[in-house]
Amino acid sequence: MTAQPSPADAPPEPIIADEQIQLVDPRNRPCGSAPRAAMRRFRFWHRATYIVVRNARGELCVQRRTLTKEVFPGGLDLAAGGVVGAGEAVHVAARRELAEELGIRGVPLRHALEFVHAERGNHIFGSVFLVEHDGPLTLQADEVADAFWLAPDDALALEDITPDTRQAVEALRAAGELGAPLEAGS
Image 1: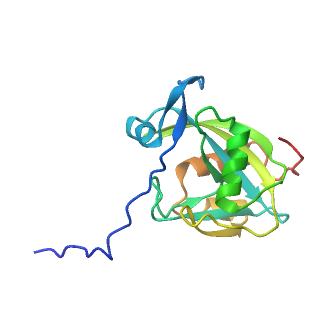
Image 2 (image 1 turned 30 degrees about the vertical axis):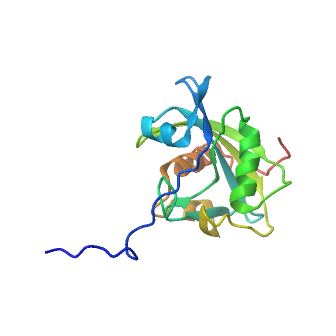
């Protein structure tokens, strides 16, 4: 006889936001929208933003995802960000996500690169932005459990990094972007 986990031991149920997501075709052309749950279920192509936050020492802000995140609960993110809403411009989504997740507002974002992430049922056209921030962080309680700063190589050496944010930061490193000074952008 095996013991059944008590409700206190069971992992929390994931929270799937009720929002319309911008869908794109395999060439990144807009082709409609769908609720987030349908986008996940049917593995539709979509856009997402990745905002890599660095401090003046060049360290990256690493976020621990809450256990209620729908994808990779409890994992580590090397970037703030998320899916782009229906009809939303990518740079607007990046600013929104940065403010929501980390409470960072009014700082220049610099677009760094684009990449495609297609694994584990995710089909994402990612837009990567860089921002420098040394001020306080205000974590979004339902999405971000903790945040801390690490040198890029130390951050990439961590276990449990979400594969898409790992890919984004590895692409930045390969492009020589992690050592470049940030300049005002969008």
